[in-house]
Amino acid sequence: MEEEYRCCRLCPANCGADRISGKYGACGMGAAVTAARAALHFWEEPCISGKEGSGTVFFSGCPLGCVFCQNREISKMHAGKTISTERLAEIFLELQGQKANNINLVTAVHFVPSVVNALETAKARGLIIPVVYNSSGYESVRTLKMLEGLVDVWLPDFKYFDAEPAARYSRRADYPERAKEALAEMVRQAGAPVFDEQGMMKRGVIVRHLLLPGQTGNAKRVIRYLHETYGNEIWISIMNQYTPMSGIGERWPELDRQCSPEEYERVLDFAARIGVENGFRQEGGTIGESFIPAFDLQGI
Image 1: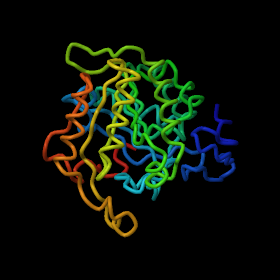
Image 2: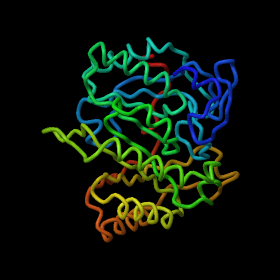
Image 3: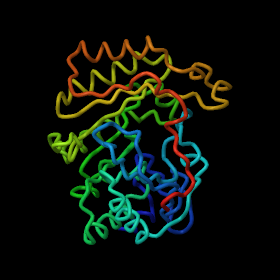
């Protein structure tokens, strides 16, 4: 499976880079797994974090170019440490030993062949907690199929319904179509949502949508599509934690502010009006940089 890095087609960018020979892909990374943090994380949805926390592994690099990325230190600047597949398997088991509710793989698409090997190794050595695939939504169905039987909970973004903001803010005009295809595959693999007696998700799909300033129309179109296509097969998490990063106003002045409470309430009211029942909202006081962890190689 490591040969997948030879002419990389792991994400929809289809860059074809020979990452084994030291070339960098559209993700900005070579073939060696690079990660910046592996620790208990408490800021996911309640059914993911719970009281004990989610065992989150933050991978470096990303095939998207989101101008508002809160994790730019690892997605764009590629902070992190190179580790072996064997070490990655050990990290999964260490997080389980810390009583994590799950293993949470954040932006792993460009390392999927190595992740598959690490998960198989860890499961053979006693990994039993659910595995969460935490994704931008910009995924290849072919790559997702490599994870079948290894991932229990799918946690993708669905950022855009329209190509124009996808191109403007993430440099991928094809994002909406690729996200639709990827989500269909995730739902196929997951089946109906399953929760335990503590309310923790053991299997299923949660789709996140981050509201951007001035983008309530896009948000409503995303939510309508998700609800009309999947109904109660999925959960929808509507997020208001957008934080304008330093300097963003120089090129994208419309993003140089927080979303107003009125914008967020309009989107929530719309979701309720069209019948969304399985959903999450963020309460007041969530906006800010407290959601951005320290990428200090903890646990790596």
